[in-house]
Length: 580
Image (cartoon, rainbow, N blue to C red):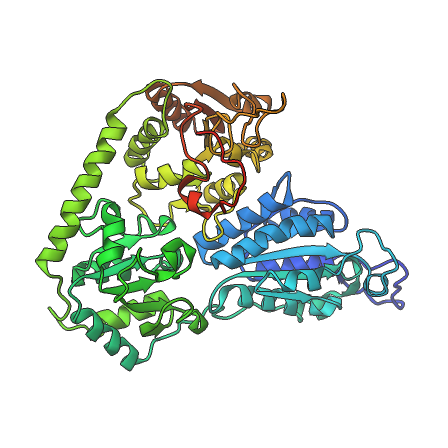
């Protein structure tokens, strides 16, 4: 992309004016050259023209109301596509807002690039007080996989290439790319500028495991009495769906999916141990972790939640992850697809078998839990409970497997994870490794933008508040996102009591809030429901419409528990206990 000759540049008689370009154009050209099709961001000084140029060049620009939400969208795009999602922000406070999402992307191992404009380097470095002065690169380095700054216009192509490769290769993560305003406006010869750009070749090369490591893992599995495979979101990200399913079905080993790995093998598969999760962890003697980490989400692999004698096989692309919580008896370092392919190739027929008593033990435990769940779902109490609402959502999602489910909250997350089955990989996105609130609308927007499919965002009313203004974004772009707000009027629950003043309790939100009116203000369709049947009708109509909608789903204010299933994470001390 070129621009006219810069003011003050003259040509000799008979010469055509030299074509010129600038930093704005080179950033857009570098992104297009590397296959970037969408940018999520918030415009302002000094990057507004960058968004305009990107849009004019054919890159789709999605403008948000807050940088954190734009960043979460870029992170979700990275998870869904295996290509870095790109977020564009202004300097200083805007950069910091985006940095929240960049840090979350890095923690969740999602490839993302945040590009931010920044202030004049010579003023920032001497702390002279420039407009939105902040050493953004230094700030980002602690929270991102890497941070780079482009100080010369001729280095823009190199900076973009480095950011893309770093975000994608090895363990994916968030990369910050700082481009000062002066560099964006710097002008150079167009031909010379084009020569500084390149497309990254094989940004995430395969990493094959050592044959002896594969044989060690096979021997360990072959000798197990009660083997178990745990599938993490890293396995879903890898898009090695065929290899995962072939390995599970060829070996017959029961599998347990983490929440964002649901659907990698369908949740109703006969080998699923999800309904017997606690027993599976407590009894398994050999556990194979595939793209899953033994962090807090898996109790660090510690007893009594786990069998203290369990031996672990871990498939991970990052060697330093191994032994971070428990001894790894059989480390398998490599990308998920390559590791599982090697395991399948080197495992002889019948080498790995599963004893019938182990299958029966899991099946019996699962049957009891399924019966209990069925009873909850069949009940129809008034006011409506979480089970009734989520049962309605489950039935509709089951009939429409193309629908993506985004889920956040405390109780809203806990209940939905167990109630809503998934049949398709990467169709469930949630709060992830940090358990962070505020990802909802950003993830929902990215899911539909990147896939073209409809999205149902199941939101706790408290969690929804973190990104709710993006309803305007959803309506502005006419996206097929249906937001279901599980409204019990509180953080956790809505029945908190303040016994010392007229102020609401710390966990109480606005009673009788009508969230559906928010989307109606922006031209979307709002629904207010109080029964599972009402929710079924509203959600069906909303999905059929193909447009933006929000369903305010009223839940019993007393439904739920403090902090959901993480109640034990709250320190006790001598503080006043919340009312029951």
